[in-house]
Amino acid sequence: MSAAMHVHAAATAAASASSNPYNLKPGEHSTGTTIMAVPFEGGVVMGADSRTSTGTYIAVRVADKITQVHDRIWICRSGSAADTQALTDYIKHYLGQLAVETGRAPTVKVAANLMRKLIYENKDNLMAGVIVGGWDPVDGGSVYNIPLGGTVMKMPFSIGGAGSTYIYG
Image (cartoon, rainbow, N blue to C red; front, side, top):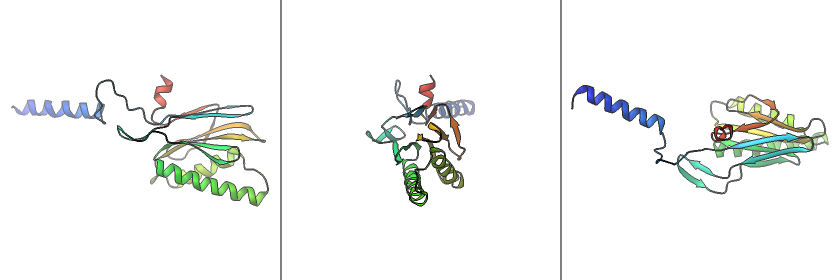
């Protein structure tokens, strides 16, 4: 085999690996996590898929990716399950403590900013993108998107996770 043929074979293999990093068979799709939230006057509608995967292997078929952190505040989680579970545990603890100290329920904005702070200050060590949503007397139903890196944005709706491209179409 000539040197040119070796280069062509290596380039073809590299292109194939980059376009198919999980070695999927024809017809298979790696969708990743899909989370979404839409606010309305009386609250928020949140949704998520239920599979936890590592590459093409589905580790858990019935995972709960929407976590309640206070009476009317919920978080949709995407990214590393360990990271997002730990973050939501911290937020749940902080919001509970805040409610006791102030004597009133926390706002969705406060929950989102606490999550943003934790994600931003640990952005080099975390793989976490979340949507914080819920209802409070100040803003009614509201949704905040916090992607990887820790930016917080109040949104009229939010879609996240690696599988969100399938929602966009």
